[in-house]
Length: 167
Length: 197
Image (cartoon, helix red, strand yellow):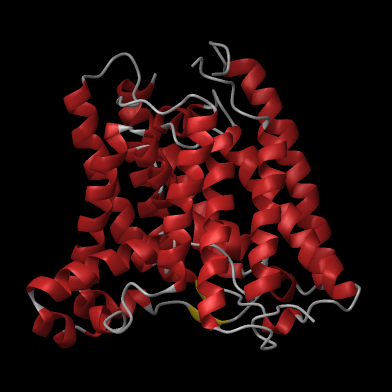
């Protein structure tokens, strides 16, 4: 199947905004992603070191109902929705996303490093681009807007140094 | 009256089904916009593909105006909608580190999940990194606790901070978004060296 074009970003934005509005109207809350990942971490820690989870006040917050949680179900939905959309558009393909000037291996290392920064930062900021920028942005939360502009500032400041990875 | 869950129209079990449906919509639109591709996301930071900014601001404005009008019509009690509390120091420091990670890693948490189900290998490395970074944060929590709670202001909205009504704040955000869209189109016409994927 031939890969289809991505949809117009403005219309995709309207679709995303209506999905967000749907959760506000039904649940009184917005979307998220990093909180669910944190719960997978705690779930794993509970398997190997349950005492350690109880002893740490940050992990202990997630100790009960670790996986039977709203955000975890939502993130499973993201997997289904992303897969369906990709399948319908012919975009399911095993490959590494990168620019032409870096090896696959180099890209994998940087992906892990960037991910580690983001995992740490998302917990510090109490959310990521979904839970803070998008959801808090739409409810006009001051700190979420501060977060959003800080993200763009940090990314534009770093882009020059990793340009070989992308362009 | 909305939000339905808060007014007891259904319980938490039904809520989990709604979580799944919301997530399907979320993942679908992220993928439709091309957010499963790390390079497309990263090109935002070289002004070559401004899709991230366009989708983000369009979504924010859509949901924001939706909340505003539903409140105006008396169909929604906005006081029962969760608003992220502000810890501005933690959020600015976290945001800066997050931005560094975004340029290096090419994904954010939600988009990396979409990349992973499409089969993007770099998304799996990113996810492993994110899980590791969160673990590090948790392990270091006793050291980071002060920073985590720094800049606490409670629930504050842009309107309250600027001293204007929520309608005025929404109007200003809409203007900002339109300005961003015009700027994004101009930047793309200047910096795009290849056709959009």
